[in-house]
Amino acid sequence: MKASLRIGITLLLALVMHGFGFAQSPLTTSLGGLTNVRTGITEEFTVTTQGGTGQMVRGRFDFTPYQEGDIVLQYRAPGAQEYTTLTVGAEGVVMFGPEAGFAYPATATTHDFKIFFNREDTYNYTLDLVTTDATPQTVATTTGSVVVTQPTQFPTIDGTLDVVDQQKEITTAQPEDWQIFVTANQFAGVKGNIQMVLANPEQRNNITLLYDANRAATTGAEVDFQPLTFNEQGVATIGPAEGESLPQGGISQLMRISFSQAGTYGYSLRFTRAGDNTVLASVQESVEVATVAGIDDMIGNSRISVYPTLTSGAVRVELGDIRNAKVAVTDMLGRVVLQIDNATGSVQLSTSNLAKGTYFVKITKGNDVAGSRFIVR
Image (tube, rainbow, N blue to C red):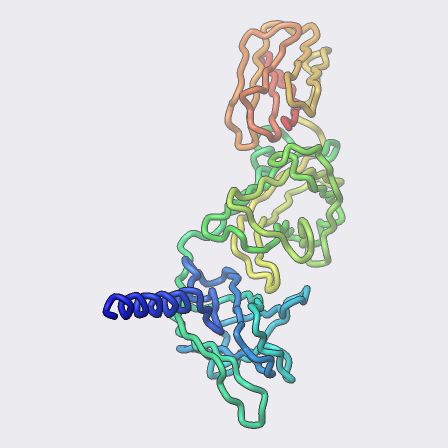
């Protein structure tokens, strides 16, 4: 009998433990599991409901502590395509789901959220499912907290048009290729836009601006220059109006610009957050544009040829009758990456060790200088 009793108790315990092991909470959220949450960066989380009887309910978050404007919360109902922005009350309470409620399902159903914090703090929350009766009743609840801190490393942005200006004289006669670099730092995944903003908006009519829509410098695709337009405030926005996610590795954006009038063009480059246009990174630069080239493709009566200008292999420099010239190749940051002294006739440059991007060729013979450029894809 004792042996039979022990077996019975063991089986009962196994059944109980089995039941507890596979029991599912009627209301869960991944909000409390978010890590490295920072102000100014949108995070995504879910709420999962299950185990209900089909009664009509709504969801309710109660955040504490809460100050007005602390949180921006967006919600996408199961099966919906778009997110809607929810209204967070003055006490930190926000409801989700239609006013008529949604059926509290027996099977797991996922609700999607995006959350954005404007202030660092430790936010405690209570998540409830409440009935839509005249006197709402709580049918499921869970609690948790999320720690929000200020980012210490913001994105950076830099351009090389002013570097081109240091390497050669920019003139109204020649389009110039240059690049914009954005580093993500702690803002990887943030949606935003690159913008070029003229210090004098009236100069916008003097500029033709193009950008490589394929970002060939990083993707390896063919270069595809597309036009950009400055608005009346002198702002040109690169890429889709709704913004794009800033990748962990940052952005390398190839640009092409030409000027119809000489002068000094001041501008700023900035990376702005999509939605509220907050400037996350900016730099101010300027470029001088002349009407007559100080560096051209001629030395004496000999014309310098550099080809192909778009390559993934070797580049040839034809010097014509020039002998014992110096050939130097610099990158967009002005660093010398290749150099040949006493060059004569035809010179072949290997690009196998060069990163993708734009390079400048400078040929010097005595006091005469000629220049050209090529792009490694």
